Length: 67
Image 1 (cartoon, one colour):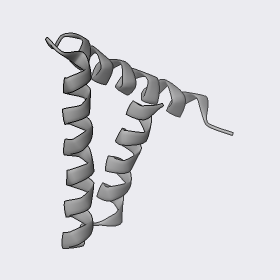
Image 2 (tube, rainbow, N blue to C red):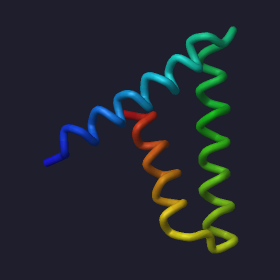
Image 3 (cartoon, one colour):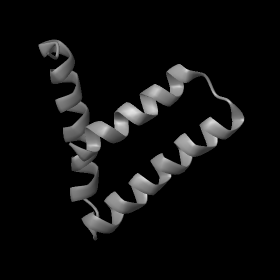
Image 4 (cartoon, rainbow, N blue to C red):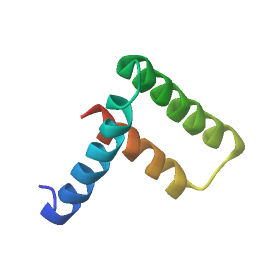
């Protein structure tokens, strides 16, 4: 079961990210570009051995954006 205060933070973050896409000329293309940037960032963090906390934050941001 999720903590309600955490869910509010995720909702706020999701709305901010989605607003960013809506304002673009091609929202779908912008969303795909952002998603690829996030995936590349996670992949590079894994390759260089970044701290697990930063990887978890990146993965959480992507999962929130997808939901």
